[in-house]
Image (cartoon, rainbow, N blue to C red; front, side):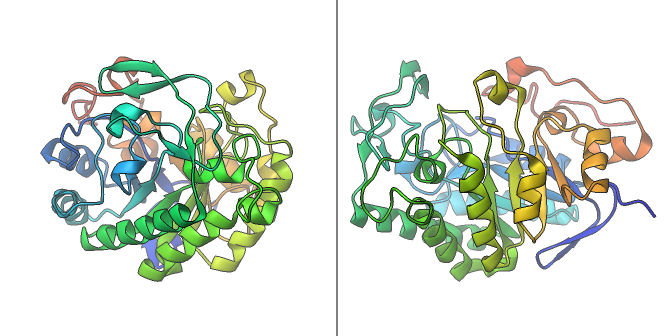
Length: 357
């Protein structure tokens, strides 16, 4: 029998009914930072996914860089997420929380005028999304070694909070130009201590965060997300293939639930990405590999058939199709997403996309 995205799979300690993963999607529907009833409806509608990966969720106030997003660092936030996880589980779904620190992709408006933090004091090009509109990114403050260790501890505490909130596991967000990615890449990391320079040093922060999170969850309920070809948030590296092959080979030692790779996007290529071929990444990583990046049903099945991926995460398709698995199975047409309602707002463009009748 041919293996497709509709085939069952074991990921970590879980036996999942399909390989259709809901990608993490920032939607900005959480005005007070506490997961709410509207979010509960949204995730529950999508519970037929083999695995839901939640929207990126800050591990601390320092990690915030977008308005109206939920956190995982207060007791109230834990209670809010409990409603989401309970509802998803009632519908036989599985959900991981994505742990997030944006690093330099923030703004003093979120930090009472204090600068955002980063491995090095290098300002990204572009603009921050602040509560009062778009503003140019500022030059961040470089972290001390002691502060780095404090952030590692923030990840551990956030992992404990996610466990208390009833999630099935967690995904460490090490992609898309956020803090861990900033440490990995030499375009944003110009440190001269044990966290900069060679590949081993630049990846040290990721290993420490992973160790901390695994100490709470066990390796088989932890994933890591990477974007080797990504240029989003002004990211670059001089030799990305060498970097991410090294990172993936080292991640083999953790025996994680999965690694989640963002494949090269058209926007990355337009911005001059030094593309790392998916086949090279697949050869480097021996565990379960989830891929994402504008995949459709046919392309996803081809990636699985070719052995390039074990499961595929879908983003925009899941925004508009809460019953994406059922539509794939029926060969039914897909709803088209409305980009104007991606970020912020109410139920329109969030929970009102129709399911199959």
